[in-house]
Length: 424
Image (cartoon, rainbow, N blue to C red; front, top):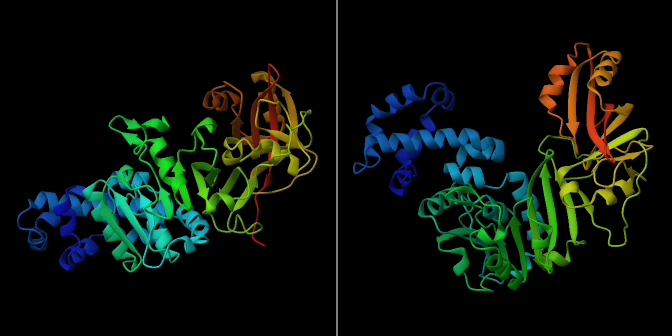
């Protein structure tokens, strides 16, 4: 999609045509919808200098992306604008709003008449969240179409008084230009996803230099970033949503000072009610004085920590909260005598534990009259889908089978889910 075709959709006539396209029909019958749009004289009139086919494609692209965008942005996606890459790489609204809430606490770092900076702003998910918190913010992106889309989103959500976007290279931003800074370096190249931070755009050393020079800054990184790549002057926070690890947020300056710990795991949920007992987010902070977690045989309950806890290397701190112990010092399961339900982990009641053997496991599953089998594993090379078929489970009950190893021996634990936090 080119900029002129996109901008044609922003006119009053363009918005009227766009709003008139039924998303359900467009998804079910894209060819039929395209044919109707090509025959609509209003479409050709949007920009007489552009081919009708290009305008139709721009319309259908927005309709499709708005529907897909609901997974990240909820109902707001119906008013927003997207590019395919911009939607894929954008921050989920729940994460952007969480980070914006932390960042807004130091909004006083922005002088009167100034603005925070959002480098590599993309379609604007993070700057929209910041502006929504009352923080004046300027976005910067190098792609002209992406800049046009971000500007359209600012207008669509009524935030033009607080947010603006300019075209430019993030790495060319002067050090110290923005006292409050957010930066999300591009992690995709011509061949797909980039895993080496040095290959980010801007490169990792440039991004950390810009963040470190600000009075307060947040730098977004991939969730799998090596711990050795983390700057010494930053606090690192691994963030998950509904059990899926999303990112690493690095906090600098005044925001690092307010983080409370060098490492933190944060669990967010989009499903209503799951965090009713702990507020909007559940946190686990590193304890500098904590030693390694003890190792002990399986107790009554098995704990499966959230990926944010695992990736932040905070399993020992999690186990300490419940007076628990690891089954194996190399595996991120821990066990305890009591069940403490939390968004930071899943709790399973251990029904039976046995050395791994297909024959013995199949017999144990049948003895529990289980037909619904959930299989989880850490430290196991077993093909879970093949195992599921080989178990030939057919009963009315449910069971969770956990595959792991203790020392050099493979084990399986048959468990029942204890539960998740409930409202109230």
